[in-house]
Image (tube, rainbow, N blue to C red; front, side):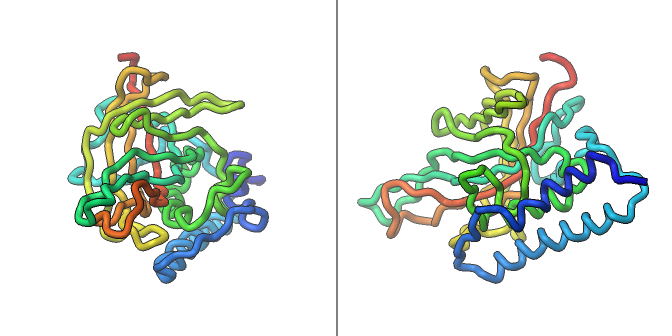
Length: 261
C-alpha cells in the first residue's frame, strides 16, 4: 500500500531542505551541545523516515491529536474545552537594552522578533521530532528564502512586540490565515536544566503561558512557549552595548476556545 500523502509530504518537507538549504550553521561557544542537539534531530528524522518506509498505512495529520509536553507542576494546563489551533516553531532573537554607565545593572528585556514556521502536522504525528527542532534550529540562520535550517517547514507568520510587555503573533500569509494573537504574560517557569543553550552558551529562556487580549482573532485564547533554546541575557550589563540581541528558538502552541467567548 502506498504511503498517505500527508505522511509522505510531512517527512519530505522536513527532510528535503538539508542538502539544498542556504541557511548556514552558526559558530558556537559550546560545540559539544551543538553537536548533540543537531545530531539528536537528524537521528530522530532518520528514524521517522525509516519507519514511514515500512508502514502499510500512515496516520493522517489530525492536529487535535497533538499533545503539548507540559508537566502540571510547570505551567497551568490549557483551560477545559480549549483545543489546539496551531503549532509553530519560532526562530529569532530576544532583545535587550543595558545601562552602559552601570556594569552591574541587569539587562532589560525589550521583546523579541521571530519568524514562525508551521509545525502543526509535526506536532500531531511526531512530537519527539518537534521537541528536537529548537535545539537544532538555534544553530542555524533563517536564510533569505525563509528556511529554518535543514527543517523545511513553511512560514506561518511572524512574532513581534507591540510594546515591551505585549507580544503579537501574526499568523497570516499569501496562502493562509491562522489569525492574529495578541497577549499578556499569565504564567512562567524556568526552562528545564536539559534545555538547549544558545550560540554563546546562553541558557534557554523560560517557558510561558500567555492570555489573549483585545485584537486577537479566530477565538484563540492561550499561547504557550515551550521547548525553548537559548535567548537568555547575561547576568549583568558588563561589557554589553546599549542594545543587543540573543538568538533563540522555541515552540509556540496556540489554543482556541471550544465556543466563541
